[in-house]
Image (tube, rainbow, N blue to C red):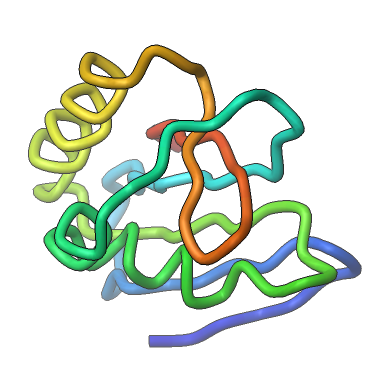
Length: 105
């Protein structure tokens, strides 16, 4: 795993060499919107989310966690399930509010 910080953004790489396959990333972005709290189980059950929250420091506006392309479906399902149960566009964990999205490429 590697992590890079650039101003207020952090980039975490959980993937090995992609061999030409488009990478999948979980993107966590700071939010001022009303937020739905996440439980520790919801955060810890997905390594990408766990890493994003861990690197979401006080002066950080966004975290992009790159993962294996074969993890895309599981990651999208987890994020979709969180959005389906939440009445708000943002989530809260550890005193910080953020929005989540899955990005390919």
